Structure formats: C-alpha cells, structure tokens
Image 1 (tube, rainbow, N blue to C red):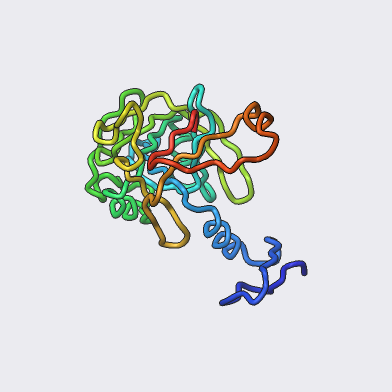
Image 2: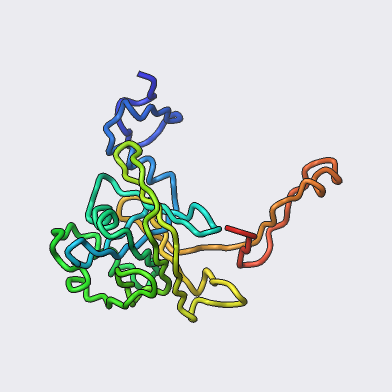
Length: 232
C-alpha cells in the first residue's frame, strides 16, 4: 500500500499520500471535487428521440476551443443527456447564475426519461435560434451546440460540442464584454456546496521581452476589480 492512510481520516496529523486504486471510487470523487474548485456548471437542455424535453446540470464542464468555439461536458456513465445528444446531435448549454440556483438544483432530480423536466420545474422553454432543443428562459446566457465527438475516460462519457449560436442577456453586458459581477455565476464546490464569485483583480501575463530585459523575476502588482485576459 502506497497511500499514507487506509481510509479518509477525520483529521490529518501528517500529509496525505493517496493512490486512487487503494480507496473506494467514491472517496476519489470526494477528493477530486474538493480540490478542483470552483467549477462552472453546464445546465443542459436537450430533446429525446421522441421529443421529450430534458434538463440536467453537469459540473464537469468547460470550454475547450475558441475558433470555432467548442465546449466539453462529462457525464458519469450514459445518462439522459448523453442519450439525447446521441439521438439528435444537438443541445443547449445554459449558464447557471445565482438567481436560478434553486431551479438548477431541482433539475438534478433523477426524473424518469419519459418525464418532461420543463413541466416539472416550471422553467420556461424558449425556442432556440439554430437547434431544436429549447433554451431555458430564466438563464441569462445560452450556447446552442451541435454534437462533434465523444470519448470514454474511466467511468465518464465526454461529449464535445461546437457552439453555433450564443444568446446574451443585456443585463450582464458592460464595456463590450460579459461582466462577471453582472453575470453572478454559480461556482460548484464539493458535495452540496456552492459559492459565488469573491474578490476579483487584474494580473497581466508577462512577456519574454520584459522578463529578459529585467534580468530577473519581478513580482507583478495586482490591480482592479475586473480581470480581462486576451482569450480566456
């Protein structure tokens, strides 16, 4: 055994050394989701082959390319979202903000596949511009996506989609960009934990010409409440 502990201790009297194969998979999940924080949430609306409307949140999600824009969503196993995307080749990624947090959590209910989750949740189905699945009307931003590819890693199915249309509410737009304060996104933590954005600041990426010219590392100065990077 290479792990320092045979099971998760209540407290640590020395550093934890951990080999994933030596603890139950659920404990690995708790460690991973406790360390990789905060995570954005993909609130996906999709249609089954029979036209049943589905909504499901996924917190193993991120943007993976910008030109053209692509996103990736990971699902443990093959659930309704994956089956629907396979059947129709389309989905909508709705952005989760603090004002719809409780609605999002409700849609994590393990509804049977033949139940319409827009009806159950009371959320508004708004027609999309480019794809068949509806957008969630209460969301402030949406990415309409077409299926590109999928792969399996461990117990997860990773689905890749190309963003073919975006819808942005004017209330979250300022100075030519999405303003993170106005967006007020939900940050996923571990277990049933969530958070909202805290302190924000600017920290410019260094250039080799400046580093080489200085002859040594200079500590940058943080400034401003709103970070703006070039492509991320």
